[in-house]
Length: 303
Image (cartoon, rainbow, N blue to C red; front, side, top):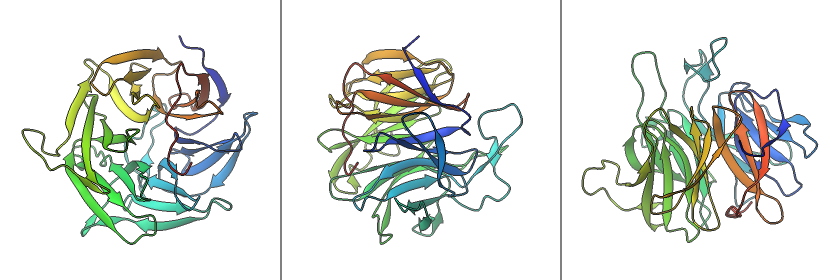
């Protein structure tokens, strides 16, 4: 078991942690339909009453926080993960959250005439746009497809880059900005998309309908959630059910597997002066963990 210290408890399926310059962590609570701030002493306070199902979070070029909102899920007593759409679910969306007040502004809820289903995670590139994944909504007898998108933070343009993807979840850019990694939850697959220009990825060839290159997959009951890219270029993927953070090289080798004290580690981000402080959302138990990682995470654009 890794040396994970529990920083905060009582969270409603935490996700999307962002390490802030003041030492606090802003994260999402999908089950509680809000975003919260956790200070270094572990105190939790409301950051944004965004509503719906706040999921992935990132700092944009204007200093505001940008949110992938999955629209909300229905929760069953005794079960950690959402079991289907919330009764009030209408669509997923991208929101801008004011850095000072937490006020939420709707940016996108559709693309090319199609409603977004369940936006999940996002990453900004150096040009100021952002890539984001849509997980797709799970229903009792069917599900929406997931996909990959690119958008501008001022609400002016959104483009579908890859569709369908079974269950597109975490995403992150390589250190040189030329590769976008996407974790596919069902089947625990890690895909790489070759970026040809900001907001443009290589078109599909071969058998992958969405154009991604499969980096690796895990057998058995493992499922992939969100991810963070390391300064070295390795990719740390939160691995559900088995309860690991799996660090993978760009060529698909497992570098290390770090066991978490939870079966649903859902996301990881890095902070601290040396970028080796790892914050990990432990969502089955509703906790935020922190530990020292052996190597530094990649410093994100604008964060």
